[in-house]
Amino acid sequence: MSLESEITDLWQRYQDDEIDADSAREEDIATLDAFLNALEEGEVRAAEKRDGGWEAEEWVKQGILLNFGLRHTQAREYGDVTYHDVLPLADTSTYADRGTRNTPDGTAVRQGAHIGSDCILMSPAFVNIGAYVGDGTLVDSCDTVGSCAQIGENVKLGANTLIGGVLEPVENAPVVVEDNVSLGAGCRVTSGFVVGENSVVGENTLLTPRIPVYDLVEEEIIYGELPADRRAFTRFVDSSIGDHDLFSGGAYKPAVVATDLEAETLEATEREEVLRE
Image (cartoon, rainbow, N blue to C red; front, top):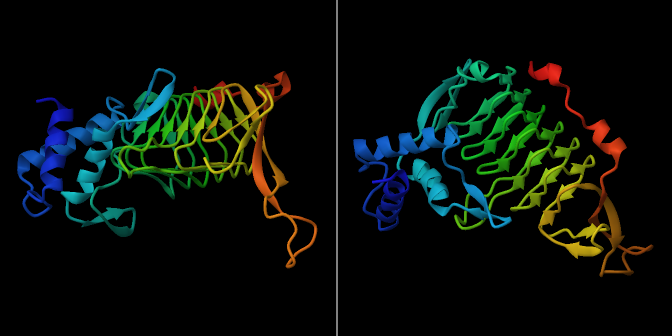
């Protein structure tokens, strides 16, 4: 059987209440271990791009959920701290072999997350199970990369950036940040939003499907994605609430404005290769 069929079979047994953490067999746990290894190696991913759009891999998300349903919480050690979880943190001993650096005191990568080559993980940062971080990407201080989030190659996640996770429902696609994107400090990307490749996003911008993106390049309003090759930043537009007796001056809601990239913007976000030598 393939790994996918084994996970699908386990999921069905779990859904039918035929198996739980007490009754899981040694071979069932071996399947889950093989699945986690495949996630860490980047052999399987929680979402894939097909025909120009991102689709969730339901069986992969099912496999992640099974690791919570078929394992017992255990006491584990991290430095001088005892914590309790169903899985340990990832083994980072091979990071140096592929040119990746992770700084101490607060940087945590959960087992089942893929970290590519030539990456930089600055403390404190957290990368959750099922996340994919592509080659050459910077995860800066105080960043969170949520469960199943897909981060492309040569991406810059500015300090204090939140990449939300979408683990359930299993059919929902997670947050995606495509190749060569630069997110300024304090950005928030949530609820399956897709940031198109080569885009540059200004500091403290909130990208979520509930906030409109005013694309001045194509002159349209879109939701749930930022097209490729855009410079984006937050602006406030009139709210439908309008004037109200409780306040004066009208009401406003956040929006995102997307324009063409300019050469100066690209120069300001260039990578310094010396950091990855």
